[in-house]
Image 1 (cartoon, one colour):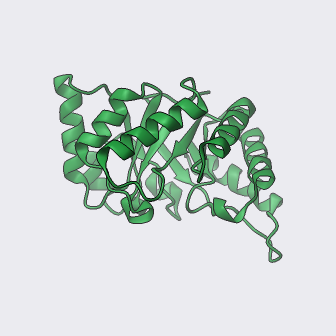
Image 2 (cartoon, helix red, strand yellow):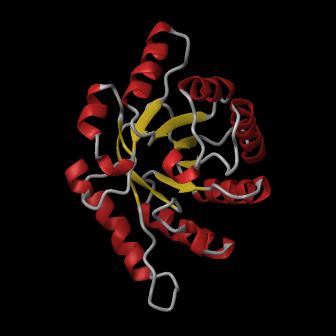
Image 3 (cartoon, rainbow, N blue to C red):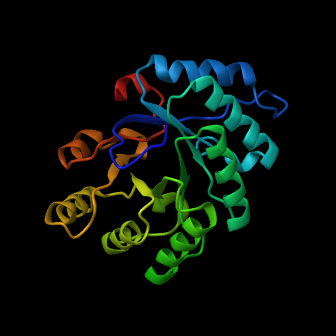
Length: 225
């Protein structure tokens, strides 16, 4: 099942369980997958910042994706595919989508400074992974060092129809939510799903501003649900 702009609910960001020797703890991966759905989550994301994707090589990342997607048995799994180059991003994206992933998540590349650089980056990313792949835009400037203005987000949404979800982690960011929802209401921007991060710190306020749910690495997903 591919995610689209109607996505709503709770999509936790999952850690990756490791053994003491640094190998992936596959038993815990299975238990973790079951736990998220037992807690009422609609789906979850692997290979994000909390998932410590940078600690894995390409084969390990694919093996983790395969294990989780199979264990989820058709329930939505988002896979983080941010990479230093578009070739690696394309390879991982196509392979996990073929496995049955629901979407991929992409953060802006490090070092992007201008609005044109940011919007150009995402056009190139979509060209690399394919316009048929639904994706989540991770707006987390405290991690990426890249600040996207309201107008930049609007342009990325407009230029890339395959963008389905904004993972909103700008802080403070309540006004951004209000502005984007206002543009949707007046027809100047198409409707997208907005799911929040930042450990749900501002979830109550963000729900009041019109977000669709959470996509965050909160330690107690049943509380978010």
